[in-house]
View: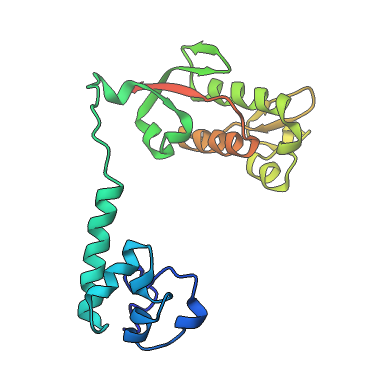
Length: 203
């Protein structure tokens, strides 16, 4: 019973916890006006089916609760539209596993209502960073992003610099997966209200 003491099947909801306290099961069940028999809740009234409380009755209550949950919170019946070329649909970049892009090219991406055709991971990175840096520069100067993006005013500190403003640069010598990961981090930190849609295609 110690193992299951805080599981749902061993708990009840009551406004009279102090009165019920650690009393024996029969007293908690029958206490006038305050016991389980007098509760308006089905999960407590179900306890009135038992004369004792042990592992077996706990198991029965657990099964009953599971059945109730399945009845109350039914899984919705949905009709799914069959899609052709599912792997090549437009997706929100935040929903992409960065590892998946290693064998994909970018067909195009859409950001702030502009469609960028014939894109590459480098052009995607440059476009997104420049736009977000212009909109939310204060976010980029947080210690974690400064280090993560290697934000600097001196391009000579970088292996391959990417200019994102008149005076600031970041490292651009990155893999496709690293670029996607950095873009995801930037969008999350900036809490942008626009979705970056991207369409990938096989190499």
